[in-house]
Length: 351
Image (cartoon, rainbow, N blue to C red; front, side, top):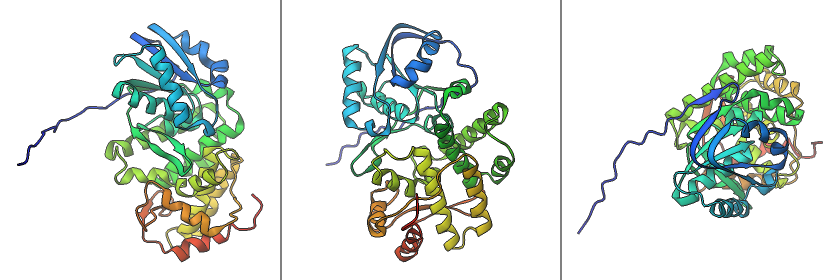
C-alpha cells in the first residue's frame, strides 16, 4: 500500500533590495537586532532611530569568523527565547557577512522559521552575502557546511555605513565584486579596470552592478543546483585557505582573492584563459592591496581538503573556472595531476 502526501505548491519568496539611505522601518511585532560590538558602537543608534516596533531587543555576539559556529547559534537562539519572540517576530541581521549568515540561519531555525531582514554594513556583505538566502556556519570540516536556504524579507543596502570600513575590509568586498565581473560580465570588468571604487559614485555603481548580477543568478538557480555554483569562483581554493589558517589570518574576501588567482592559473593551464587575462585580474585585485599569494605547505593535504567542499561529490572535485573574462566553466573533469601541478607552484613562496 502506498499513501501519497501531495505538497505541490508555489511559494513566492521574492523580496526587494533597497540601495540608498536607510529608510524608516516599521514593524508591528517584536524585533531582535543581531549585531556585534564593533558595528553596534559605530551604527546601532543610527539604526534604532529609524526602527519603529512594538519591542526591540539587541543580541550581541563576538566579532569574527572564528565565532561563526553552532555554539554561537545556540547563544542567539537562547536570547530569542529569553525575549519570547514568536512566529510573527522579526530578526534583523545588522553587520557583515558573518552576522548575516548566522542571523539568517538562526531565523530559519527559530520556531521552524521566522522572517528576517538583512542590513549589511560591510562592502562584502552588501554586494554578495546579504543577497540570495544562503545562511549557515562553519565547523572543523570546512566553511558553511551547516546551514539552510532562508530568504530575507528585505535587504537594505546603505553605502554610508561603509564610511567607517577599514581598508582591508573594503578590499575584501572588492574581491567579491571582481569575482562576479570576471565570471559574468566582461564589460563590467573592463569598467572596474578604469574606475576607482574608492570614489563614492563609482562605488555605488559597482554595488548596483554586483547586486543585479547576483540577483539574476539567484532567480535562475536559488538552491545552487547549477549556475549559482559559478558564484563560488575563487571559493573552492579560498575555503581551504580559510580552513588551514583557522579563519584568523585572512578575511574571507582576501581568501577569495587568492583563490581567484589559483583558479585563474588552473584555467590558464587547461586552456580556458590566457596569461594576459590572468595578469589583468591580478592587476585589479592588487590595486586594492589584496593578497595574491599563499604558501601551501602540503600539496596533498590541500588537495584532499577540496573533497569537503559542498559542490564536490564522492571522488569528483567541482572547480569554478573563468572562461576568458566574462564567462565561466563549472567542471569536475580536471585530473588530479593537473590541479596538483598548479598547487605545487604555491609551495615555498612568501605569503
